[in-house]
Image 1 (cartoon, rainbow, N blue to C red):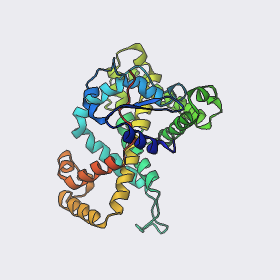
Image 2: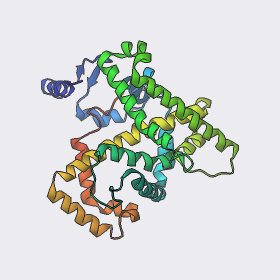
Image 3: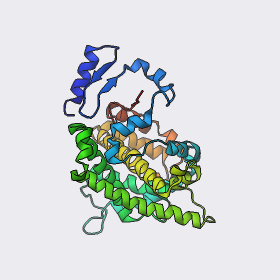
Image 4: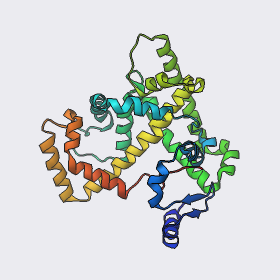
Length: 317
């Protein structure tokens, strides 16, 4: 893993505009030239399977990543995306509450400068803000749930790192002795009990109205396996912890450092926000987000320079 970037660069230089194979402990990787990306994206999942690729790449037999359903994709496309303008005030309200919980006050109770760990700060804010959208009001401020959701991704990614270093076979047979795997399994069981009970409670109280990811998946589940309370809980944890919180925290931390390192950029962004957000950030709308073009440019460039992963388009034939 320590030599991955160097090996990829060497492969690109040696095999210009041609596929090449990277030998890995867990599984080999065929790197396809970028010029074929659009064509490959158009190929259907029955020929190029993204779910199995994600399962294998993330040591699914040990981490227990869900396989065989795109229920979460349907929930995002059919429920979340059309409701983005309506969900924004909910996120802002929870984020406003989260700042009071996460940012400690000065020793004298004043707003004095304090030291923080940027990644941990952003991780906690992202966890609290998105939890309300994913599991609703009753659970989103449960401190044990929040801590479990935030740390589950760490334990899972550390387990994946172990698998990539020692291979799938070793990881599979010795999983019970891998501390991060044991912790992640315990956390998964806790979430399945907590959210599984919430799914059953909601079904018994059908007159209640809920508008969150857990409810969307419950309503859009087609198969018996998708509709199981434990599976719904597992899927909610997987998407919230692995796909939302972790990637958001990484991206925002990079953006924060990029901004701090450039005084002129910092001043330019400050002026833009003073012009666009005349009444403060709690009044953000979808339109004001579109109006902050310099911030949008920074976010795009920062994520281009600091991607979540070098190979994000993974498929198995």
